[in-house]
Image (tube, rainbow, N blue to C red; front, side):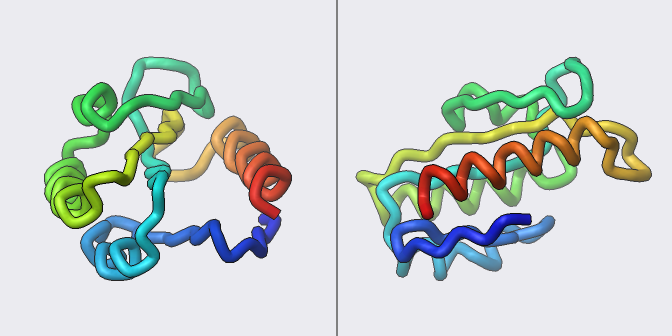
Length: 117
């Protein structure tokens, strides 16, 4: 992965516990929050989608959708001017990360490095 060193860009890895980073997010007070999640959109593994939160919620896997939705609504209430965008990737095999998904992540890391560094 390529590291981004820009004080205006704060990458956070919430894993399956999005609420664990809510306080950090509120303190950072971003204008734009990009939430990267797997999206079950019925596409080939690695297919990338950018969507508004309301449009993507139904496609977020059910095992962590409720936590993510509650957390993002709470953060939105505290930061009403913040825009939330979902960056979703169609997952591959549930037992392993497929090459297509790895390529997607590598491409995104390079893009973020180029944009924010």
